[in-house]
Length: 68
Image (tube, rainbow, N blue to C red; front, top):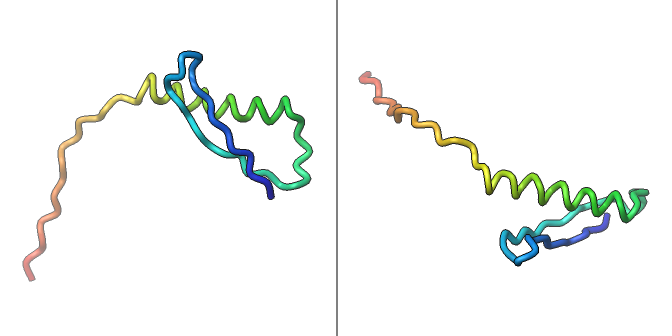
């Protein structure tokens, strides 16, 4: 198993993302495929940061103890 650590950020250095790909020693992927995997992880993370899911305002439910 090999670990390919990487860091990607925007051209201005903002939105810095660090991660690692863990692959079998005989993974058979090309450098181009590995770079695409890195970029896909960054793109997914960046999209989540820039477009977070909406906050759902749900009431808090408190379970009351049952009298025995």
